[in-house]
Image (tube, rainbow, N blue to C red; front, side, top):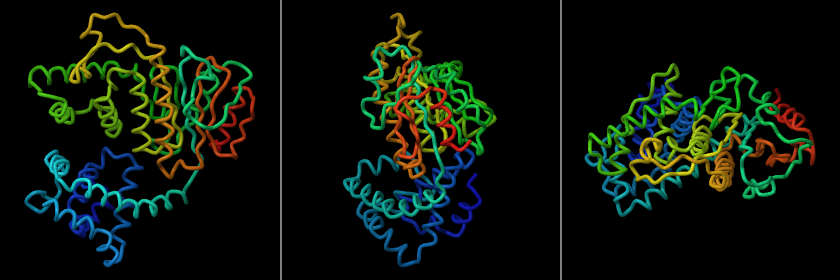
Length: 387
């Protein structure tokens, strides 16, 4: 169901005034409000309220270049029905010789609209905290970790025990729905009630259910390739869950097609990125583990249970995990930095079990000393969040 505010804007004809290639995409995004996080719904409401409030001359000037490109592309009521954004429309855009121009005009629209929305967000700014934890089995010391990140090294007076020293971080109850997240490969952390908790190991039964369903699709429906499989995957319903938002979020993360069903750390990284994009939490803890060595598989069998599809013994891959994580640290940090909610008010702490050093990327007023006790660092993190 569309939110009342957006429903009112649709009812007054706003989406009919906007160029169809722009309006249909967003109509598809907002039509099922039951699976939108509050941050997503808020963004869409602010975006279209801003557009609706534009004086007629500014409105026409803003969308005139996109209308011109649509004419060149051959977009009309026949080729592009309103209120429908399907793979046919995606194919139409991708195959059109003016696709690059179209993308440029859409980017130009957001270059004018997003700064206004970002200013609104910054005026409501508040402290935020991101804790990224790595397993103690990594084959390197802290001098070889977090090499792609800036920030500063903070020495610890004793080796870090993340589940003990950082327990108080996750003990705080979230003040708003979907504002605190714990995403982990194993079961290292416990979280307070109200925290969104996604655990790769705890999802084992659901992951197996999805893999079985995908295998049946591939075998019985004779899927011809990843593209056709992708269409069918989007038709798989999420598991029963009291929270339809999280049910759909978990399903989409696991069926993303980038190995989240098979690889614990890929699941943690991708779920984290999607949580940032969609929910904009003020606290997020991402805890990685040691991934297994990958076995040979085809592009379709990336959704298959490797224990059943290969007789090769399963082995932990410490070196591969280290290589992966060096990129994942950067991806996560960069994803947060894309959004106004996190710029200049977010403390990032990158830590690993058993090590006597952490990496802190934070605003200048975060008072981490050059050397401190792990418990003292945790207290400063809590103080930063004003708990």
